[in-house]
Amino acid sequence: GAGVSQSPSNKVTEKGKDVELRCDPISGHTALYWYRQSLGQGLEFLIYFQGNSAPDKSGLPSDRFSAERTGGSVSTLTIQRTQQEDSAVYLCASSPKASLGFSYEQYFGPGTRLTVT
Amino acid sequence: GDSVTQMEGPVTLSEEAFLTINCTYTATGYPSLFWYVQYPGEGLQLLLKATKADDKGSNKGFEATYRKETTSFHLEKGSVQVSDSAVYFCALSDLGGTSYGKLTFGQGTILTVHP
Image (tube, rainbow over all chains, first blue to last red; front, side, top):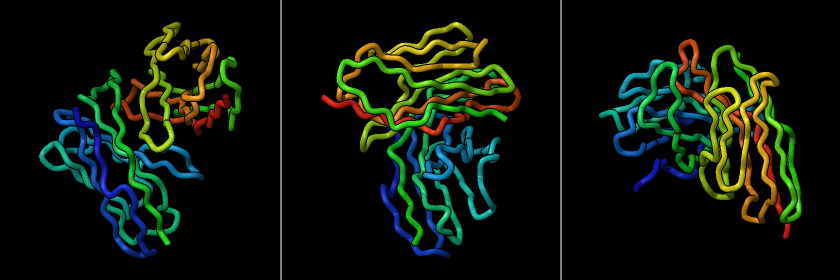
């Protein structure tokens, strides 16, 4: 079946512009995670969604970063006033569900490579 | 907080050599442990996992044993192939506290296998 998809695959933007990154999770997966993969920081957790709500936003690096999820499906990560340090690969993962005290497999998308010039 | 430390790479081996990639962790709760692999041009894939102490995860000839006493989860394979060339990430999911399964990753180890 279809896996997690992300768009665009590559995005080059000028410093100061806003960008939107999209994630389409596996159908029926209620849990959705965003991670960032950068040279300096490795792979870092950004935010977690259960359905349309985000009980864990602890990884968002600044208030320039926000995310939403609609219909319990598609999620959009928005970065406002991009900076060069935002350059990274942004990964989305989905899981059938998530609950306290139990770990389910996460399925990752191919990522969006963001370059801020 | 939680953290994962992997042996630094890159690691270069000849085909059929033995592979070990070391991974140690620090966690406040009761973590599950994972190895993820990222093949060139592809997304992260789960390679194997272990959910409690002394569990052994295995897949595609790779193995790792959850050692609580040494807080380790070393990845091993007895005979690597060229097709195993990839980046390997050790990760944990801390099931205590308020975690909803978010993953904490090591820095990744690049493995290159030559014919």
